Image (cartoon, rainbow, N blue to C red; front, top):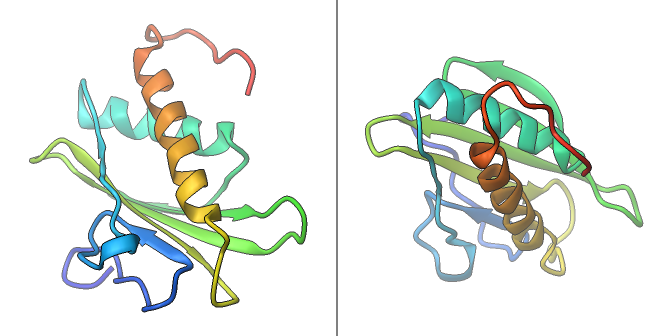
Length: 130
C-alpha cells in the first residue's frame, strides 16, 4: 500500500481499482453491512469461493491470487477495508500482458456477487456450492 491506499493501476487496460480515478480502470468498492470483522470474514470466504488463494493477510489488508482458466496466467487482487466508510477497496491486475480481455472486470463482478451472498448468509451457516 502507498499512503494507506492500494497502488494505482498502470495505464494499461489490464487493471481495475476502486481507488483509481482513471475512466475504465475505476470500479466501485464493496459496501458492507454488519461489523468490519464480519465483512472481512465474508470477503475471505468469497475470495476462496470463486477460486482465489489468499497469499498474505495483515491488519485490514489481503493479497490474493487467481489463475485464468485457459492459459493459467496469474492475476493479483488486493483488498483493504475502510471501516469508517463501510467499504472494502480492491484492486485487480494482470501480472503480464497489456490487455486482459475484461477478465479483471468480470472477476470483480463475480466476487462482488459472492461477497453479497456471503453477507446475506446467517451467521454460522456453511456455504453451499460455488
